[in-house]
Amino acid sequence: MTRVLILGGTTEASALAATLASNGIAATLSYAGRVSAPRSQPVPIRIGGFGGAAGLVRYMVESGTTHLVDATHPFAATISANAVAAAEASGIPLIALTRKPWQPAPEDRWHPVPDLAAAVADLAGPPRRVMLALGRMHVEAFAAQPQHHYLLRFVDVPDRPPGLPDHHLVVDRGPFTPEGDRDLLRNHRIDLVVCKNAGGAGASAKLTAARELGIAVTMIDRPPLPPRREVESVEAVLDWLGHSAHRGV
Ligand code: 3Y8
Ligand code: NAP
Image 1 (cartoon, rainbow, N blue to C red):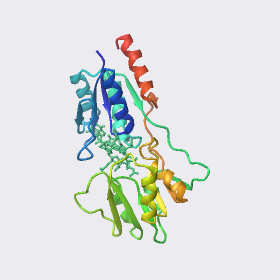
Image 2: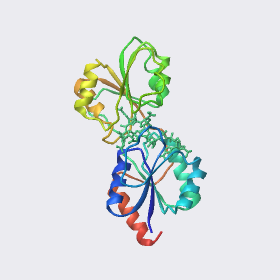
Image 3: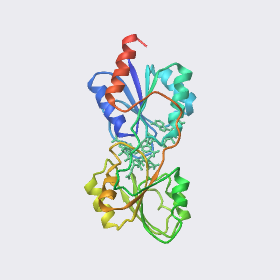
Image 4: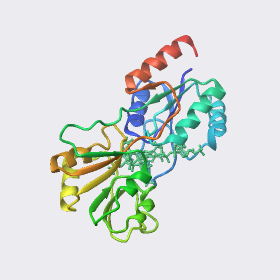
């Protein structure tokens, strides 16, 4: 009996959950509990950390999990490393459902940086109007460059105001649209967008809008992840499940 644990929090994870549910394959979708009301799902969900790789092993053994799918965000490096370790320790097969990094089009004005610290350092200089499309978890780092006006976009209303002296906060959850992001960038007279190279469709609207408006983008490269089997489509995960399930793994 196939029983899938999906490590979720992305558009792809939700698409996989919907497909497994419609195929009658038992699955549970797991959220870290980063936001107040994660999206409802057509499969049972669980919310909260497992307690490291060992906790993940314990959860999978106790729940009778037969397959682990890491469909977390490319920047969720800790859980992805834990998934590789837990799969090795338990012998439960693992596949990652991920998305290719975005590549700039010829007309894009992207400036790639290796990590968040480099994105902060890159903002040294005269005041600008900057959209930080990074969510809530990394905003405080930009207090090192207080001279700018920051447009912030969070999923939830924060329990205390962000520590940036000059900011405007928008509370909204994606997926976003190019029209909506174009209006947002134009109405706030943004001249720089800072974002992670998340890939996928759920966060790309701001890049389309920036391209149309000729706005520069600081693109933060992904953190390194341990080697694991990776696919980029729900169909490929189904094949993998079908194949393994066929062998009774
Ligand atoms: C809790 C679960 C779905 C999944 C939807 C995707 C798309 C919309 C775009 C911008 C960029 C950002 C952020 C973003 C997007 C999808 C996807 C995606 C980026 C939810 C969700 C959870 C989270 C966590 C949240 C982080 C934050 C990151 C906001 C659900 C809505 C910036 C990533 O307030 C916080 O603490 C938010 C934290 C981790 C990154 C950060 O460092 O702050 N996602 N986002 C997951 C959990 O608890 O396990 O409610 O649906 C999911 C989605 N957010 O099923 O439709 O596939 O990625 N999420 C980034 O890409 O840089 C927003 O504003 O343009
Ligand atoms: P992270 O830094 O890789 O993980 C930190 C810890 O959070 C993990 O060690 C684990 O705790 C717990 N955790 C993370 N994802 C989990 C999940 N899906 N289910 C159960 N526990 C989880 O992760 P993160 O960057 O904070 O991301 C948290 C969630 O937000 C993930 O679902 C991710 O897909 C989503 N998300 C993140 C980003 C981003 O920019 N990082 C963007 C979009 C969506 P334990 O060690 O206790 O098990």
